[in-house]
Length: 294
Image (cartoon, rainbow, N blue to C red; front, side, top):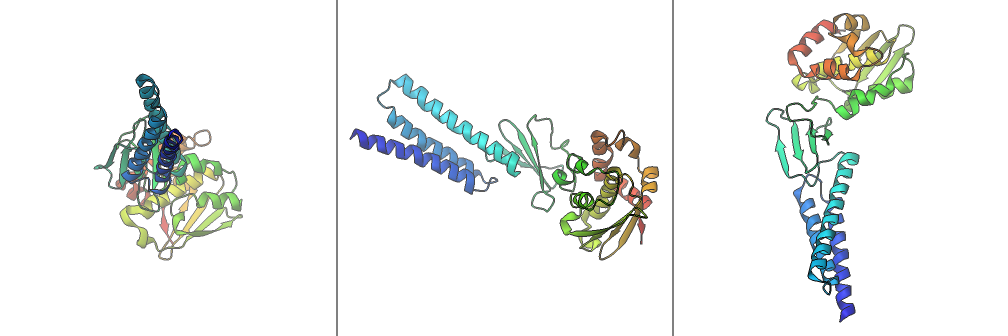
């Protein structure tokens, strides 16, 4: 009888563990069922532990069972956080999920020890900001219409180069910038120091909410800042072609010199380019001044 009770107890422990980790690994992170079933698995596992310790004193049993469940849940929280960071997904153990009233394409998840902002959700440019310090709100979190993780300065700065013509470097930079999600090819004129980018899409087809204008301004300032000697960029779509010159950008774009202060100043890049790219009037004015239709 004793051996049978031990066997049942261990079965409950193992079943509870398997149930929890199966829920964590198979149920989509955005579904509350993942957290429900994983905690339920922990409770089943605790029942097994309780059966194994039934001959202990009441105080020891309570301490053991509570400690086991607390460790079990803590492990689930750690695994969830690791998944959020490494796999860029919503936290399973969020206690509040809200759709931002200020920003139509953002979901905010509040977890016990951190917040997660899912921006441009369900689009090609979806990205996550994991706020472990809880320093942001839905009004202050960095929001751009692009995939910030891929196109932000923290990533693209590694492609800084003195010379245009390094195909690998130039290609990696272009494929990290906005509009690359639609596919592209590029050509380099090493004599004229010109870069030509052909996008595999019609500009008007994707130009919702000034997306093309925002992207081309962002790309141009980024390229001129990161590739020191490129002088002219041609952007070709199946509908239109645009040209922008370094001289015009350096002369007209506000605070361009501050962005390139002692190399690349990341804070100024975000302040004078990333944040400004959300300003409709600024985008319209800069696009009109900087770009020429070919």
